[in-house]
Structures are given as structure tokens and as C-alpha cells.
Image 1 (cartoon, one colour):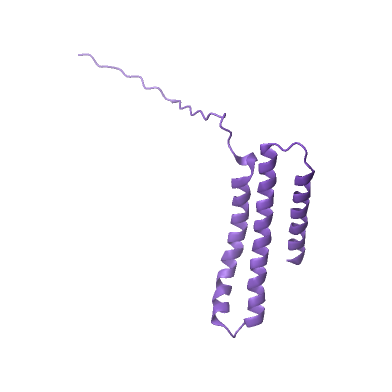
Image 2 (cartoon, helix red, strand yellow):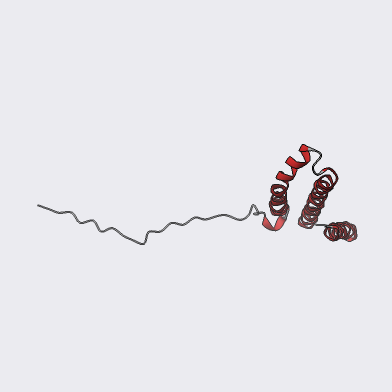
Length: 121
């Protein structure tokens, strides 16, 4: 876990440094940098929350009911970490946004044609 936190902190520092080195900052570039920053911060926050759960469990295992009940929730938090980080990246990165100039066209065709025959008496 320490290696993951360290790698994400290094990534965050590199993004901040790259942000300051850019001369031409377009709107798309700014949004991409912001997206990566927010995603990195959410990963770091989830590691710290997981670490806090682990520290409480090691410190108070068997002595506190709250710690025992919170350990039941921990696997769901780990699953939520995976989903939330992915969704934050998907919802904030400009690559996944539709531009307003795109027009969605829906075409429906029928492969069967009915031939209607009227019976005349």
C-alpha cells in the first residue's frame, strides 16, 4: 500500500509540475489535467481511508464492536474504490465527452416488405 500511495503522490506532483510548464493552455488540456488530478486525489484518498480502517483494526481488534462492524463494510469500500475512481475519470476527462457539434443520427430500416394483396370479388 505504501508503494501505491507513493506512486500516486509522485504522479500528482508530476501533473502539477507539467501544469506549470505549459505555455499554451487550451481548454481541453486544462480539463484533461484537472481530470487526472482529481482521479489521482481520489485514489490517494481511498488508500488513506483503507489504511485508517486497517490501523483501527490492528489497534482495536477484539476490544471495540464498532471496529468489528466497520471491518464488515471494508470489502464493499474496496469495491467502491474501484468503481468510483473509474467513474471519476470517465466523467471528468474530455476524451469521453461528446462535443456539441456531433449530431446523433438514428436510421431505422425494415428488411421485410409487406406485399398487400387485395382480394377482389
